[in-house]
Length: 410
Length: 144
Image (cartoon, rainbow over all chains, first blue to last red; front, side):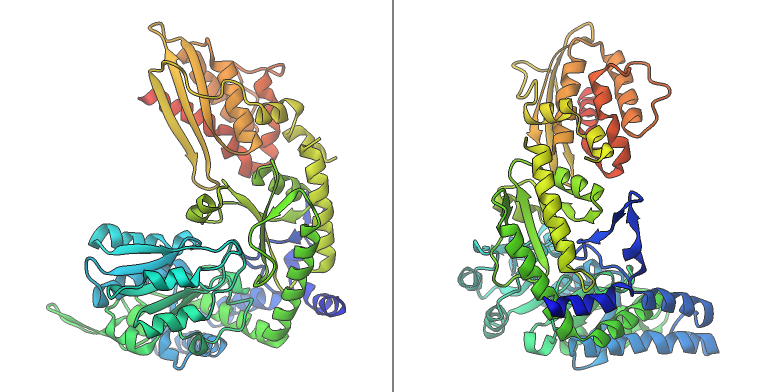
C-alpha cells in the first residue's frame, strides 16, 4: 500500500475542494468521481487566466485575441488526439457533452448508413445517454434495437452479443467501462463487430480518466467521453470518429462555423472537424480540458491506473468482509467503481447517512434503469475513485458503513 | 450519533418506513394516481375513495422507495383519511412548506402532529422530493 500513499500525498493538495469540511466538521471524502471529477488548481487557474488574458471567439476574427483563443482551442484538440491516440486531429470533434456526442452519431450515422428495419445492438447496462438517442431512431424511423445480456459478473455476454448480429445490424453502441459495475468491455466485442462489418461506438465516459485509451487498438469507429469526468470543466464533450466515416456522414447541426459557402439557394460544408462544430464552441472549456489532460499526463496514466487499481482492490476486499453488504458484479475486471446495497436499507438512507459523515457517494439508478430492473433492485449506492482518493478514506468509509447498518437495523 | 440524522430518522419515520400503514389498494376507489421520482426511481401508487360530501373515506398506497418516501406516504394516508378535500389541500401546502423549512404559517399541522416528524428533511434538500412524492401524487389524483 506504500505506493498508494506516496502518490496521494503529492496529489491531494492539487485539489482545493478536498480541504472543504462537510457540515463544518467532517473531512470531505469524495467518492463520486464517476458522476464528476473534482478539478485540480491548475485547471481552475488556467480557466481564470484564459478569460483574463486571451479570450475571444475562435476561428473567426484575425485580431490578436481571436488568434490566441484559436491557438489554445486547437491545441486542446491536439492534446485530445494524443491522449486517445487518434490518427488525425480531424477525428476529434468538440461537443457540449458526451451525451451530445452520442446524439450526433446516432442521428448522422442513421442518415448516411441506415434505414427502417436496420438493427442496432446495445447492452442492458448502458447509461440512458447511450440508450435514448437510439430509441429516438427506433421511434422516428423504425430501426430495431436489440439488447445484449449481462453476465452475473457484470460484463457483456459476448456469445449472446455475437448471436444478435444479422445482416441488418449496422452499429453497436456499448459502454467501454460500466458506470455501475466498473467492468471493462471484452476486447473481443470490437473484433466481432469488425468481422461482421458492424460499426461500434464505445462510451468512454467512465474509462477516459481511468484507463489508457488507444482508439486504434480498441478498433472502435466512435469513442465519446466528457471533459468533466476527466478533471476538466463541464460543458465540453468529445467525439472521436474515424475520419472516413465523419467525412461521409452529414453534418449534425447547422450554423456558423460549419459552412464552406452559403448562398440564398444552397450551402456547402466546412471540412473536418469544423463540419460538426456549428455555433460558438465551448472555447475556455476546451482549453481547460487540454490542461486537465496535461495534468493527468504529468502524473502518468500508468500511475493513475495502478493507484486506482490498488484502491479498488482494497475497497472491494474490505466491503466483501461485511456480510450485510451486497456488491454488484465480482472482483475481477473492476476499475474504480463499486456499486452495492446494504440489506433492507434503501440507498438514499445510506447516502444521507454517509453524507453526514462527510462521505460523498452516489445513490439511485445511475441513469441505468434497464440495468436496475435486470438486477431486481430499485437503486444502489456507488462509490467511485479518482486519483486523489486514499486507503485511509476507504477505512473511514467502511467504519461509516458499519455505523449506518447499526443505525437503521437495530 | 449526529443530531441531523436523529432529527431526520425519528423513531416514527423508521417505524412507518418498515411497516407502512394503509399499504395496498382501496377495495373501491374513484380517484387514483401514480407518482414517480425519475431522479431516483422511487414509485408510489395511490387510490382513494371520496364520497359525495368530499370526504376521503378511504386511502391506500403501494410502491417502493426509501424510508423517507414510504414513511411519508404512510403518515399521509393516516392523516388524510376522514378529512375533507379542501382541508387536505391545505395540509398539502403546509406539509410542503414544513419540509422545505418554512413552518411559520402552518394552519393544519402543529408540533404534536405525526407529520411534524418529517421536519428534519429540511436539512437534506435532496431528500425533499422523497418526502413530498406521495403528497404530489395525492394532488394529481384529485385532478382526475
